[in-house]
Length: 323
Image (cartoon, rainbow, N blue to C red):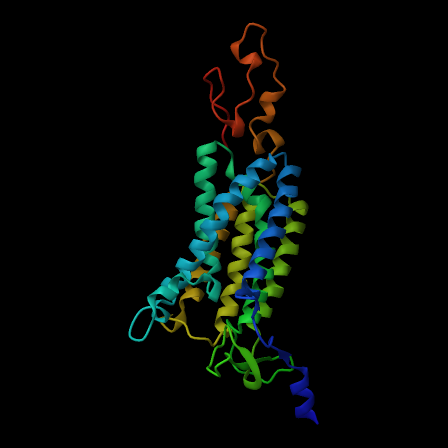
């Protein structure tokens, strides 16, 4: 009875992660990512506007950050798991099959941040206020995205007999061939493992709540919320990686992601401690705010001209403040 109770208490994997509407595949992994992006975008619009920022900035940032994040995430995954795509018996073209799963969050954040930094530098908009506004929403989106790993039966931990163990099913396609990502469960349990996707999901939600609290309680600004996000996520990812048992490349006996997470935690914490205290004023968030209240002289050519978007060079040739 005790064994049966334990088995019934296990977390089941979904029987499948892909459905079809005619010839069109509907992938749960993609739906989770899209849902996370939509929620993150909605929250960022509210948070950045509340800080005094222009909502148009958020839309422009999303246009560059989303594709850059997907490319960066895929590049990181392919580089750190190159043996899955290159070598004898491998299909290199599968490296471009993003829908099949395999996005490294660390790479997505890195390239997405770089793309937004380049955009803001071009537009002459301070990056730190936006980074602080978007930070909690990113980790919330990451938590939602982890559900996609559950549907894909990937990123799982070591075998275990704890009551909350995750059951991994044997999946096959219509021809009866083994297909862990696109197939349907036969009902056969091949392993009961630690649900590391769930551990990271819960951790991400905890970091999300902590960031919202710390931002208000400690009046964090000037990029410190974003630095705290990086440190918090890296800390949780470090320990989750130690529990994972799926295939991964190792450096000195540790997974690549373990090393990257540990280094990121230290660097982010140092950055957090070195950044200025306090929060920005609305004028610092959007340099246009302090110019809109300045009356133009009647004989000035700029009196009848619209304000330069995103804090660009003023019509009189002067430069806006940058932060």
